[in-house]
Amino acid sequence: MNLRNVTFFIALCFFVYGSSILESGCATIGTPTGGPRDSIPPVLLDANPPNGSLHFNENRITLTYDEYVQLVKLQDNLLVSPTPKIIPNVDFKLKTVTIKIRDTLEPNTTYRFDFGNSIADNNEGNAIKHYSYIFSTGSYIDSLQFSGNVQLAETGKKDSTLLVFLYKDLDDSAVLKHKPRYISHLDSLGNFTFHNLPGGTYNVYALKDEGGQRIYNHPDELFAFSDSTVKVSDSTKPVQLFAYAEEKEKPKTSSATNSKEKKLKYTASLQNEKQDLLTPLTIEFNNKLKNFDSTKILLTDTLFKPYNAALITIDTTGKKITVNNKWIDNSDYRLIIAKDFATDTSGIALLKSDTIHFQTQKESDYGSIAIEFKNLEKFTNPVLQFVLNNEVVNSYPLTSPKWSIKLFKPGDYELRILED
Image 1: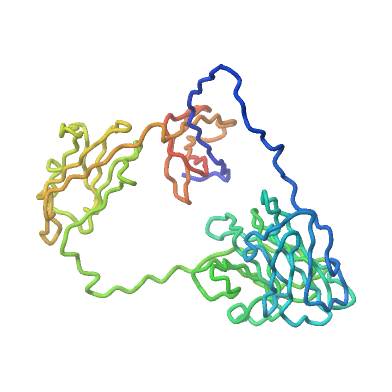
Image 2: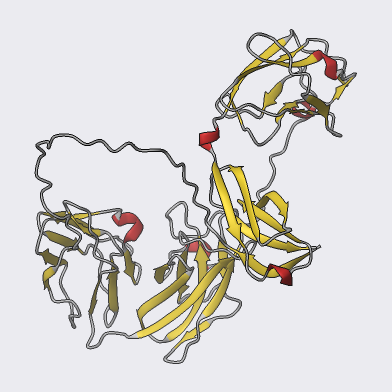
């Protein structure tokens, strides 16, 4: 089967409908609503020194707004370029935000403070979008830009938590040794843009900096790099980066760990003692079983009345038992496992007979789907696939442009059409 180059990305929203009863009666006394909600972010009234100042030699910057403000997730939002050795101290009080510069400023250099969405009003949290404060210690402000995009190499998707680094030091080991010269965030589409750059040649990297050290020191972190250096000028073209992570090294196990456990144990596929209505119940054992007798595993109701239609099988690995049954929603069940239902390959059995108590989920926990496809006739034997976390969780052959299903597990799925 070939996967057509047509992939539909659909976020499926499931709605549970309930009935509502409209009641009529006497008028009631209510409290005033207080007027419409404030949705306007703070307005900057004054910046001292002014934004865009030249020959800057101050160590304190004050931003004054028209209302009380707060700083939200400043550490995640604030980027200072070029990266200082000592991070400035940024604080707020009433209607002002204060920046205290604690590092020696470089001569003839343009500095940029990107606050992201961290400055917001104190009452409703309305944020000023992408506010930047810029100054130069020289006679002009650098104005070059450099942009690009980052994708995850394995899936082609985006991860806006990655950071993009620019290094003036072109040594390949620089990203392992010290912080970058310039840093940029990614937007939701994986795009980045550096502003107010001086001309020059740079190495470009992208990194999921989970430790916050601005250094690539964990090989299992997502990482991307440009195959060649980038010369920033008026005509620099955007670059495309692909992020990947090295496979984590599997921990070494001793011979004692590798030996089979002396007890026969199992885990059930229940979640919070609840059974999914749409899937079978599975029981997975720590060791391979032999002498398996399915008649010694019994599915019953709370009065121990057996469900004779339940089908109990074991897979080819000899470790997983599957209980297939037509589940009744919001019902109690018991799975009784006799002590001698099987032994493992070492002849070890359960220490005692066991009973698993569980309840099925309600139908109201699920959603229903109805989809109408256009131009479906262009596909040969199409199959609708639901993909969750890069794994196909459901497949349905399509025989009509209209497709629906009564019960479906809620979630955000990627939809694909597979052509046979």
